[in-house]
Amino acid sequence: MLKVLFIASECTPFAKTGGLGDVIESLPIALRERKIDARVIIPKYSNIPAKYKKEMVHKKTFTVPVSWRQEYGGLEVLQHEGITYYFLDNEKYFKRDGLYGYFDEAERFSYFCRGVLECLPYLEFKPDILHCHDWHTGLIPLFFKTFYQQQPFYQNIKTVFTIHNLKYQGVFPMEILDDLLGLDGSFKGDEGVEFYGKVNFMKTGIVYADKITTVSETYAEEIKTAYFGENLDGILRKYEGKLQGIVNGIDYKKYNPETDPHIYVNYRSSVVKKQQNKTKLQEDLRLPVKDVPLLAMVSRLTRQKGLDLLNYILDELLALDVQLVILGTGEPGYEQALREAAERHPQKMKAYFMFNDALAHKIYAGADLYLMPSLFEPCGLSQLIALRYGALPIVRETGGLKDTIVSYNEQTGEGNGFSFTNFNAHDFLYTIKRALDFYNNRRPIWNKLFKNAFKVNFSWNNSAQVYIALYEDLLTKEEVKGKSRLKLF
Ligand code: ADP
Image: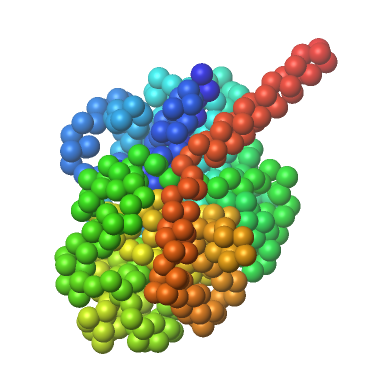
């Protein structure tokens, strides 16, 4: 049985700030269903819900070298819904209120990378593949090749590094090379950890991993260009031979309007029951209960998510006969602008600045249209969740949005949403108005689009299979090399 260890900084239901948490939960489940022994390791954060912390079993205490220092390492294990989860415990680094944003981020995640490699012999599971995710795990391929690969236990292990968002790279002063990573100057330079005179965790993952993936085919192409490349496009072009785009899926059991315990009325693809969810949502949110299109957004409030476009057209949009609900957390400037708009239009707009999973599900179930005018979007899960609940996405054609949403084509009748090309506020507004026209004046077409949303399938069915092929390919390459070595001697 192929064995894969997922290594990441978040995983639902233990710790989540965005789509990464969803993927680290749902992809291993999908792999497991396909007879791959996929397990997961994340830091043991103090804000993991107590009910899970209580069930964890302490497996081993060991030490983790952080350069010349020896730090405590604790390995905890938990079985949850058929998957084995491991947690790396160190209160100095992970007993904090949130997941990220601390002054010693470089040290916390250097420690995590080193700690994961140190604890492998204690897992009672020797992975064939270390599947690392985003910058927090970017040092693992480097540490693996430098400190561990030659040791008998670690031989034949391969590393995969997945970029979920190239924007967040983990860039720190060069001093950490010696002080935290325990490496000398020979690791600097283009072929090493260096990025404009600093240490870059994301770049390190790209350089040292055996294979790189990112979360949609379009994003895999985009990040090789200067516009989307976040100054790593050169290095990505250099390593494009090992880069592959694989679109994310969502967990179709968790996001299932037929069984979802969070929503008001369960439904399959019924317009009537969807309407009932909308009515209840309007009541709960103190919006007038009436048949107007309900637009929604559940999102991190950052520039990436196109908040500038939304803000620019908010008053024009709210002059129309619509309602708008926003759930999100993020940059204070955006929160402020949205709060003020909601105050100006109390009968039309509600904005909630918190992370609330149950409310998110209610919004997906109650909304008619889902707004996602992203500046860039590696994959995006929200538009897939929206489709699953029959809220038609309005997206900008970038990254995974381009790969998953087909704008309604009046000639062919194809489409599962609406899209626009340029990052332009009035193109966005125009596209919203186009969608509203179908809702208000051309209901048969609207209803057809609503049905189309339920026809597409963005579960992990296809992509899990692609990952398996990728893992197998990596491992057989090694075997072929092994065989040719044998022949030589
Ligand atoms: P990203 O990972 O860039 O934040 P994605 O669309 O890939 O964006 O995933 C976002 C995930 O986080 C979705 O599951 C979305 O519903 C959820 N989410 C975002 N903000 C909130 C919030 N404030 N409350 C609840 N869920 C949220």
